[in-house]
Length: 507
Image (cartoon, rainbow, N blue to C red; front, side, top):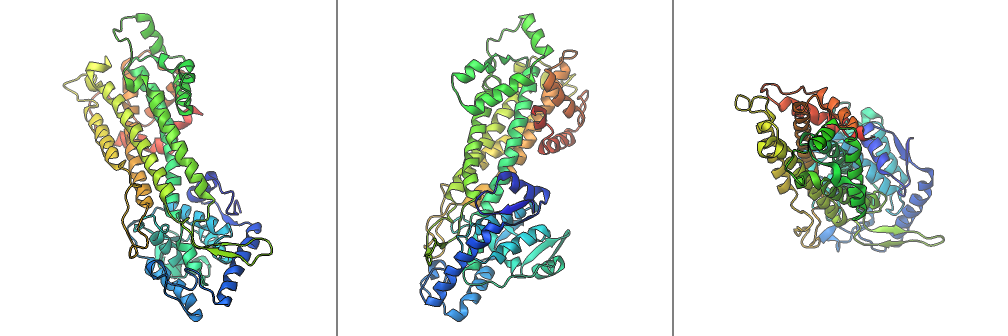
């Protein structure tokens, strides 16, 4: 197996390999001993007749209800069935695979009291491409992502629905066709599958990957815009960055300076000395400070998600020391507050980046600021050029501002007021995909406008590295000489951005 799960050392690269590239996974040999030890502690508790939450009691507000020994297995099945109550559009294949992998890794840590077979079944489903149909709505991020994870577990017991070989099937049928035996849940195993933050963590992890691509792409777009607007790269001097040593700002400043090296436009503008402007607008001059703040905020969110990748997030947890019988302790590691706050920070970063991108689009299309033909049209008046492309960018930017409203400060009581403070982490991460789509399209519009501006300054050329990005753009969108619908150009360029073609210019 390419990715072996221990519960302690899973990386983002491995998550992306399994979720996006279909890489195989399995349970590391070292995990079997830990899992068996914690499982033995659960079995000892059952044999002793002692009470432990979720093992021989009801759940949530019903925790005080004692369950008889001959009903503990049915309790777990009932839990999965009752909690599979999600609604809304289904998670994507990548999101589902990430969620399955992350849940398997958390259980592999050996603190959940489940048999190794539970994790092995999840790994077989991943390797066999059996993907549970998981509705995206229904989690408040309190006792983890209960409803989404219940839909995952529902297929594991041979029920629910799953996608297999491009077909939606009954869960049992999908498992049968893949040659995977459904599991019969033992005490605590249903609860351990449902109690966790892996829904919101899956969405956040994938969003952070795309956000990294987009911030690099925005640096490339900004460099082209700087030349289109005949701006000065002086503000990106390394000494300025060292005077206020934020790592993100330094990265963006280096990128901008490198992209515009060898720019004929810059040299011509400097030699002419006819420009009355003393300083560029903030959307150009402060690009390192704004893009850099976005980079740093995303980095902080990533640090939180990295902790969660290898955390035990169910309840109760089972701790077995050498020679000890084990302690089963109720806690609150399932609570999604850290991830909800990280997702809010990522959302603010995404909205901020889109805001400055749109301002550069406006700078280029506005004849009062661009020193170029109005709306970048060769014959303004007869042609409207990029007038409505800028309006589209404005619409997307304002939508993202609204979507960036924090979710982590909200709460609504559930489960008879037992779960009286919740994180809203799943909704905090769900909106990130829509925001990233908006940002990707906004950056596509900036690239189109910037390349049009560079064309209008021909025969002068932009920087050597920026020229490579220009050629990537022009491989999908020709210069606008007369009005044409730009929707297809935006869509094509957005797809290039998503696959990393623009960001790779920096490599």
